[in-house]
Image (cartoon, rainbow, N blue to C red; front, top):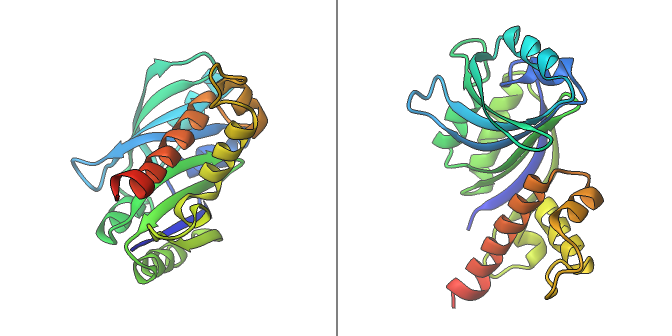
Length: 215
């Protein structure tokens, strides 16, 4: 059945922790992550920062970052490929993979990472939670709910996905023709267009999985 969890994590030993602490107005959103070498996972992150030069100087001094490269640009943000350092960093990636966890969304700002994840059960999440605490990570749990296909939409979706769907519906985003576009939803939610798109896509995928694919 699994559980959905949403929590904040703060530590200078989490990847990009020093950069988030130094640049509190920075906004980072994980696009995807993989690891050929689990000790050096690679993340593609959309980064919104008003001073690219200061950002890259900060990344140069961030001990959690081995190598970084700007690989793309959007109207108000840049896409970076970031290879994590192999030592001195909380080995969160390997631990959640071993625990059977799935990262649904990850975003960082104001010195803090916000994670939305799925785990096979509460015991596996508790072990991951204990690991992070033992590593000195400050944790704030916002939500834990059974990921029950027969449950309510409030349990099926994360809080941010539910909020995005509700705002989109109330704004007329699903009308034909649309009464609102992604930019208007992003302004209402206080996030980027890309983040809105991701939340709506994931929420719709979960709802289709429950109400269509399972029938």
